Amino acid sequence: MVSIQTGASFAKHLFPKIGPLGATSLRLAFASLILLVLWRPWRRKWKRHELLMIGFYGASLGWMNLLFYLSLERVPLGIAVALEFTGPLVVAVVASRRGLDFLWSILAACGILLILPLQATATQNISLSGVGFALGAGVCWALYIVFGKRIGTDVHSGQATAAGMLVAALVVLPFGIVQQGAQLFRPELLPWGLGVALLSSALPYSLEMVALKKLPHKTFSILMSLEPVLAALSGFIFLHESLSFTQCLAILLIISASAGTCLADRV
Image (cartoon, rainbow, N blue to C red; front, side, top):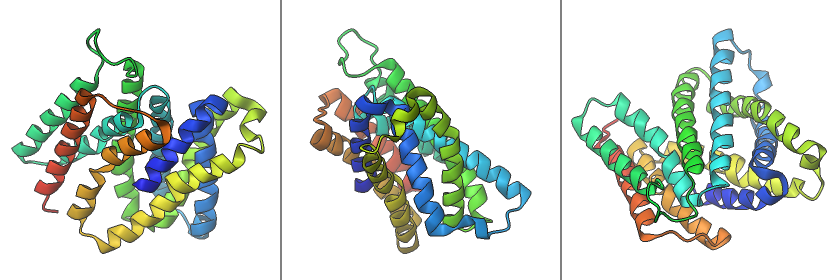
């Protein structure tokens, strides 16, 4: 989580140079190359339905990253991550038959309402479009989880991630090229793109695989609920982003909803 949020902070420094579309394109392009070399998915004989699921999985991954970076251009990092977290929360609530989980979803909704700039006194660094992009990224995250679980039952996780990242790069890269053209591949930007890809994709995904093997599912999920806090801290340290008391309370409500759902999960 520290690696992912540090990478997101570095990516935001690229926005003035190549915009969020360009930053997303560089991240996914480099990440796909790294994971392809690491896992070599071309050695597998892919079945037709597996390729179809990889297509959906990779497309949701690409749009999730693209919408998240568009949100990050408009709202602080901690808020963007907290809003994006509503995607996995919705998946957990929909899959649950417990009434308590619906109470957790109401708590998360209260957090979202606190973030929304509904009043004239709302903080100036929160835009409605940024909130919308973050929630859209959450929807794509939910789809990413659904398709990831389906493909993960048949395909090795490393090969599935590498193939999905390639699809994500192919989905997003045209947007970056159309917007930035040859400027996207300026030599001085490539180390930044490689660094963001390592910090935001290749390294954390590899660490996640190790963690999932050594930690119970519930423990892993509860720890992941702390990600908005680390995002807010990373934004404060690297981007000098500060949050109001109301915004911190909103993040706390969303974290509590996510952790509460995980604590009640007996799977």
